[in-house]
Image 1 (spheres, rainbow, N blue to C red):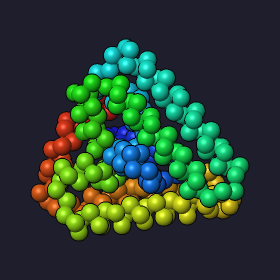
Image 2: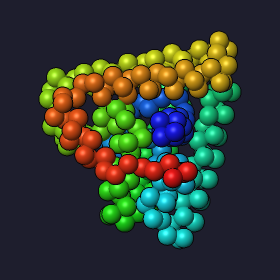
Image 3: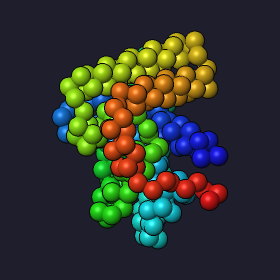
Image 4: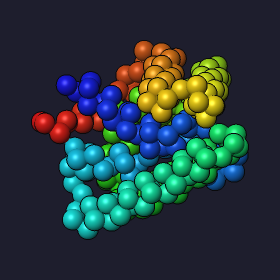
Length: 219
């Protein structure tokens, strides 16, 4: 059951964080922030078990609902524009990455320091190896230059495959459902491959950094 919940969380965050792929920006500030938080935090925190775990106040829940609604509407507008346009997917992905980074920052500003620390632990549990692109995680684990290069290579391959899948969808060679499932499979495969780069000692540190297990909605 926990595995199924986490799969749904990964899928949910994957769809929310740009829908098609997490292609990182060239603008330094947004680029850095997006890499530290490769998922959509407003949608992650909107999951009932996550909100409960963070002990959100009534005011925080109210503001969160507004953030989530605004983010979803803005993201869907960009996605609809992409479907109608003939431009390359990267142009729209840039907009989606900027949007995600902006709303992630707003979400973090809503939380207190304790809640932000716990949310980071939850991110590690839900995103798995995907979060290893984050400079924060790389510093925490003391990754070697060789490990950093391997993770970057996997991240680039992840983006490359995602763009190919999206382009096929734009060309009518994939249905929307097939596109989403292919992108999900691609993301999970690369996340698992990134985790395998860690040493035994680093895995222990990373496991500890995930904190207490996130309970499912049924627990």
